[in-house]
Length: 66
Image (cartoon, rainbow, N blue to C red):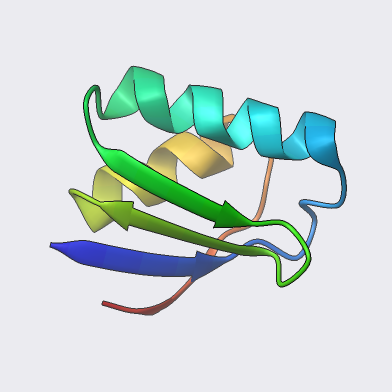
């Protein structure tokens, strides 16, 4: 399942790396695409786990679609 989030407080390369690492830990092997300019994260995997991982990393994801 594909999940798309906006992460308004993801503002720099360090933020992107943190989010990517959190998702890799929570959903090993999941395909993750991050568009930093648009502040969007797309992940192939469990949307609820992905959202929890992003929140635990200190960010505020908003699930915008699948």
